[in-house]
Amino acid sequence: SRTVARTPEGAVTVGGLDVRELAEEFGTPAYLLDEADFRARCRAWRDAFGADADVFYAGKAFLCRAVVRWLNEEGLNLDVCSLGELTTALAAGMPAERIAMHGNNKSTEEIRRAVEEGVGRIVLDSFQEIARVAHTARELGKRQRVQIRVTVGVEAHTHEFIATAHEDQKFGLALAGGGSRPDAAGGPAAEAVRRVLQLDSLELVGIHSHIGSQIFDTSGFEVAAHRVVGLLRQVRDEHGVELPEIDLGGGLGIAYTADDDPREPHEIAKALRDIVTRECESAGLTVPRLSVEPGRAIVGPTAFTLYEVGTVKPLEGLRTYVSVDGGMSDNIRTALYDAEYTVALVSRASTAEPMLTRVVGKHCESGDIVVRDAFLPADVAPGDLLAVPATGAYCRSMASNYNHALRPPVVTVGDGAARVILRRETEDDLLRLDVG
Ligand code: LLP
Image (cartoon, rainbow, N blue to C red; front, side, top):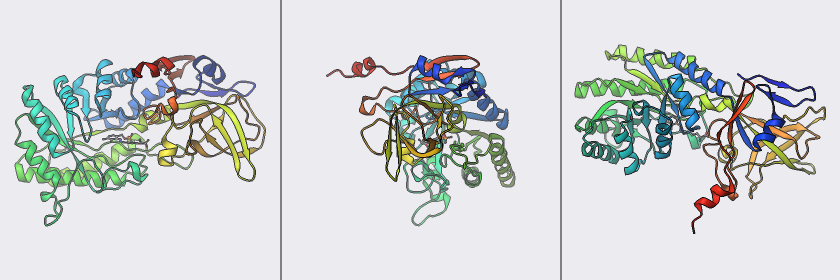
């Protein structure tokens, strides 16, 4: 949403602010996030799904108090998956009933806090957890609303490490039965439903499925919806109960490079609605309330990382290595998933020929790559500022202190004003933890 322009000497401005001044004021590396764009994306999701569905922003993509306030104001709910995320959500005033609690191995403390605070739903991920949540709710004299996370056997078309609904992985309870009972009735998911329905301290409100992340195609979601409705039908037939909710998770992809062609919220909303409605009607089921959990698609495109070039090293016959002042500690995605990013010189114009570079960080290992193959002007030099777009999701939230790096700040930039929402770590922050 913010206007990107160039000054007469060719420096990029965002929302009217010169990146050189932003670098001066906030330091580099820094994540520069567009609040107006974040809010607009929240509204696009809300509008696409409408009043009879719920959008839960996946806090794992990026969460801090300002984000929670924006979500609250834009009418989104929040998916959290740890005590830390839950604490942040509550501290910033998200009503507990609009929070969903996830995780495949929630601790006793996480379960207790979630139940005590009265979160709107806990998404159950194992048989042990069914017993634990039921026990805690009973002890606290509460009836906890829960969903059961199922794995539908869909392998999303994405990087293997982040596909979650195929068979051999840790999340959820499988729909299909194993061994002598390959049908759903004999599967762990159906058994989980049986157990939850017997427990007075749990209220089973629905079924949850999340098939993966950075997905461009709606067909995986459609297969998931089809199979989840199949379970609802079976639950109705076996127990005479119609579960009122379906959550189809997150996973919608964004454009990291020009080759990526993401779906819009209204496309995914229409595809999900159509299939859920059609399948429920043909099964004679009341259409359940639908919810989704986008993370990346909301926050990913809203931020870029601003770096300063420190060294430039041409390797004869190979390429030129351009080192910036961050790296795998502020963006692990390239090293971890072979993720692709683009990069641009933003502090000045250049008429130099494009040159093949690899933009790398300052960490002590050769896998510390920010952009694997990048064309930058051949005169790129120390002191230049580079911008890497689409770093709003899973960059600050997965940032580390590797090599005792200080994690960069998140600064909102737009409409001629910039504001720190998450400050840069300091040496004192590091030493404060070091109590030996
Ligand atoms: N709901 C559940 C239950 C999830 O596990 C996830 C992501 C989401 C929603 C949000 O998915 P999204 O809309 O953001 O794709 N670190 C990886 C992504 C891991 C996603 C894990 N779960 C990355 O950087 O690509």
